[in-house]
Structure formats: structure tokens, C-alpha cells
Length: 556
Image (tube, rainbow, N blue to C red):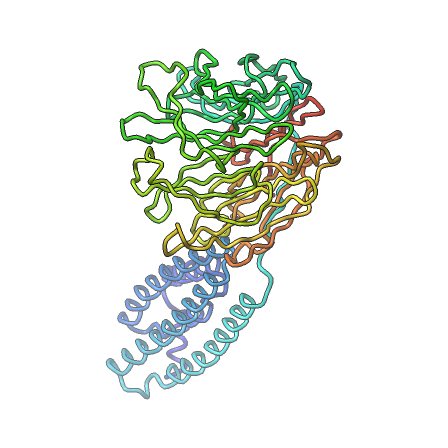
């Protein structure tokens, strides 16, 4: 009887045999050896009756579909470099393999007992038990090795990000670069705007732009003059919330003859000074937009500083009331939020845990601050405005910005630069995820330190502003953004990358130089994938060289 059973199995219908061979081949090809025991055993089940064939076809089809889905999930979490995800995937496959093998064996036994005496199929039964034991042991060993490898083996290495020089063009005293959206030929495009300033008193400063920069990455570039009427233009602020495709240029610095700054609005015409002249030399670096008094018009919030040659600096937090005219003219009415001890560099409104706050920093009075209003959304009553220090360390905070997520925990973080003459640093602060942000602690992490200018002098420091860049490579996607950091007066541009991309609690970063100036200062670096090729472009103003470099950051 056993010989007859084997003969029947060897002489099954050719078409049916080909189907099962194809099924097994596809399974092995797609799933590798993850469920080899299941498919190998499925080919060895006796095929004497219609019932066995019918149940086997349906059962194997369903199991393979489920396993293919699980394997796809496994590839996804593998690409995410997640040990936890791989472990879950491994256990799912292991458990499903065990259940599938037991189920196949149970179905075989049940059908055999239902249709004929056990003696008829004794060989198949004992053969099935033997194969089940052997293949189960093989499957368990494989899964054990697989899981141990996941736990203790090295994860796939991330590809290296390499800067590829595309182009460079001449621009004397190139300082701050900014990318903003513009309207050209009935579509939006990218405009690169660069502010240029000369430290020699009474010299003329300039703002240039390069419209449609995505079309000129590898061609000869001749920047277009925007204005030469602004003294010491700083970083450009896109002003789309006010008027689409407009910008605001903060200006002024502590250089003699360049201290009388303002906020200048530029659209199709300009520049238009928005801050009233109070006969004091203030300089400005940033602007934020918010309807402060609830009249339906966006106002402007900014910090400013006056730094005399002798005496302590004065820093203020002010807001300018939008008059609500059809066209923007200046000046706007000035209102004070903090007359002394305010910020002087950056300001940023954000919403954290249902609370609207303003993050700001002071370079000259060395403060990192957070403001809020008890009467929010109204911010025009100074009695309702409160301020707290995020960090009480008195260091020259150069830049502050809220990043959606630095460490891969799906929570926002602050990225802060300490621009110092001797020991500059890049710092991250974890925004409190629970409790009252007005009182909870910000956890501090020093990402990199030891930055210093090539030569020490008044007004020099390092590093400059950092940019968080998301890389979405299909082969090695990163959970944590890469940081591009201007070295400012040390003449370098740095790339910082998380050493442990899959661990939100680890804040260690590698640091490498991706651009080194032949002379000195690097201005504000801009990074954006302007040509939509999947690789971001990086624009590097080399102030002392009089050049702007254009790189493409290639991941792998």
C-alpha cells in the first residue's frame, strides 16, 4: 500500500505538479528561506484524494499571501534600521510558521482519519511526523539564528553623504543666503537671495538674487541686483504671510557706520522701512508674523539691539502694528513687549502642547528665552506677557530654531548655536513632552563643541546657523535628520550625522568638514532640493573669497 501511495504521488497530473512547483519557486524567491519548512512539507503531503488537493491549494495560497505581506513588512522595517521592528517581524514569522506546519499536519491527519482506515496511510502518517519534527527543528534553529543576529549583529551601514560641487559664481562679500518661493512663467520656482555687506564704514551694501535657481545650477550665473539702499543687510526673511512672494530684510550690525538698521519690506518695489526712526542705532536680524491685537491683520514681531562702543548693550522685544492698508507702506506703529533684556537675533512663534509660545535668543545679553501670553491669542497687553529662561548658562546664543524632530521620537526639539570666540557649540534641547511647557525642564544635549574662529577679533565667532535636512533614500532612509552647520568665522561647513539612527535616547553625532574656505568666513548656508531630483542642493556663501558655491548632497 505504501508503494502504491508513493506511485500515485509521483504520477500526479503534470499540470497540477507544475502549479505547485511554480508556487514553491515563487515562495522561495520572494520569502527566501523564512518559511522553507512549510512549503517543502506542503509538496510531500499525499495527493490521493480530491479533498486533500482542494484543502492544500486553498490553505497554501492563503498562508503564502500572509507570509508575503509579512515579508514585505520585514523589508520595510529592515530599511528603517529598526531592531525592534525586525524582532517583531521575526517572531511573527516564527509563530506563523509553527502554526502553519501544525495546521497542515492536522488537516492531513483529519482528512485521512475521515476517509479511510489508518493502516492504509500509515506510511504517510509516520513520514509526515518524521518530516514535521525534522523541519520544525530546522525552522527553530533558523529563527533562533535570525533573532540572535538581529539582537547582536551589526545593522546595515548607512550610505555616506557626499557633496558634489556643481557650480560657483562670483559675488563680493556674500554673507547670508536664503531660498524662497517666487512666481515665474505662471508657476512657482525657487529664488536664491544673498545679502552682501562690507565691514569698511560708509561703503555700499547690496542684496542680490538669482531667480529660477533650479534652472541655473550648472550654467553661468549672473546675480540680479535687488537693492543697494540697505545698510548691512542680514538674513532674508520670506514674508509670504504678509504678501505672497515678498521678503523682509533685517539690517544693521555693530560695525561703525553700519549700526543704523531697520526692517525693510521688498516686493515688486522697495525697499520700504517699517520701523519708525527713534534716533537710536538699532540693528535687526529676524522677523516673525502674528496678529498681536486680534484685528485680523498680521503684525511683525522682532528683537533688536543697540551696542555702544562704551557701556552695556540694550536689547528689546518689539512689535509693529499692521495698519491694514491695501498696499504696504511704512513706517508701522512701534509697540514694546520688553524694553530691556529682550532678544536681539531670532524670534519664532510655535504651538507646543496647545500653548502658543515665542522662542527667542540674545547674542549680546546672552539669553535663551521663551515668551507666552496669558491672554493668547492676544499678545498686545504687556501685563499678560511672561518670559522664562530655557537655559541659565550665560553664553552668546547665536541662533535658535524649532525642528520637528531631531532624535526620531516624533517630538519637536530646539536646535541652538552658541557662537563663541573660543568654544562655540551646537546644542539640542528636548521640548517637554508632558506637563506645562511654561515650567517644565528642557533637556539639554551638546551635539558638537570646540568651534573657534581662525583669528580672534571683536564680532567674530563660530559656528553659525545649522540646517536640519531630511534624507529619504530608499536604500537607507534615516530616522534622524542630517545637520548642515556653517562654521562662520572658522571658514568651514560641517555635516553632522547621528551615530545611532535607531535610538531616540542617543544624541551622539559624527562631524566632518564638507567645505573648507581658502580664506575665512562662511555665511549662512541654504539647503533645499530645488530641482526635485531627490538630492538636496547646498548654497555656500564664502564671504572673503567673494564666491558662492553650489553643491549637490548625494546620499550613497
